[in-house]
Image (cartoon, rainbow, N blue to C red; front, side, top):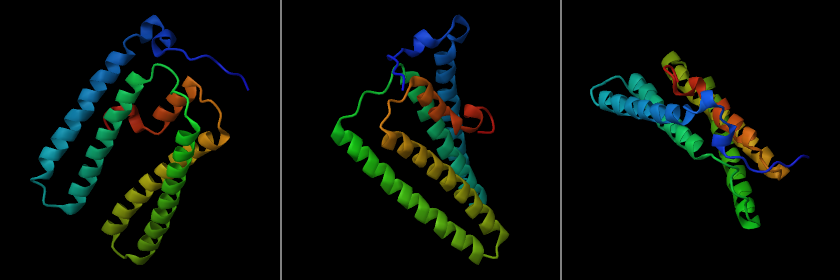
Length: 171
């Protein structure tokens, strides 16, 4: 295993990429506008399906803004964890994996029971999110269990791989 010293994000950016942080800041503003716009619209919408889906999109946009903030702050490797922090992280992640497993199984059961296509559509949407969460948690767990140092490129890949469209319209 090769160990690399921490590198600042700025040192990784070539001159043509120097605007990346500004891009992240613009995306944060865009995502926050999406949240504000959707939340304002939700008050006037009577349809619970549309309200639920749009509310979920607003939550995703809030999540995207947080990820962009993390990308701005991610200028070096995360600090090393103490043994206590390491064990706490493993415990928390394992618990959430178990919770996601339960949620996925319960969703499968509910989808089998319902005859309503509208309800199935909503449950499939939730199941898709739960499966993605499950994959992310398992990835975190595999990194934690390995106990290996995570390289900066691993953090970038981890942060961005599961962000559809990276905050562009449609995601």
